[in-house]
Length: 89
Image (cartoon, rainbow, N blue to C red; front, side, top):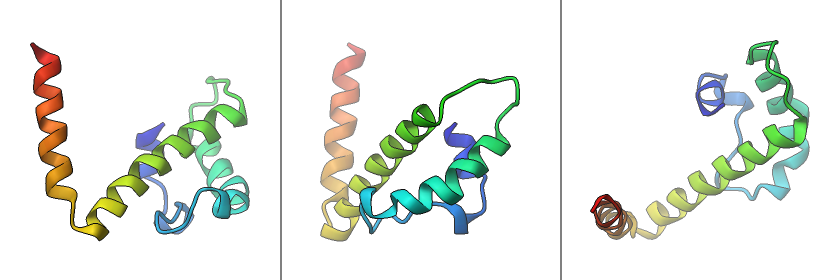
């Protein structure tokens, strides 16, 4: 699903500087039909499932964007790396 969204036209994608709620109409009218059209027709999924994946992707990308804006991305990357190394043990 993420690969499909990444390969779409950038004009269809969400804006991480805005909240998901502010873009809900645009997502439902533009992004959701584009994702459904790009998916394999044999895959049967509900619109709410696709919207939930888009919402989680927006949340993740917005968090990273906010950290970059605040200049705390290096701290986040270091903490994330330490956490992943701890989980490998």
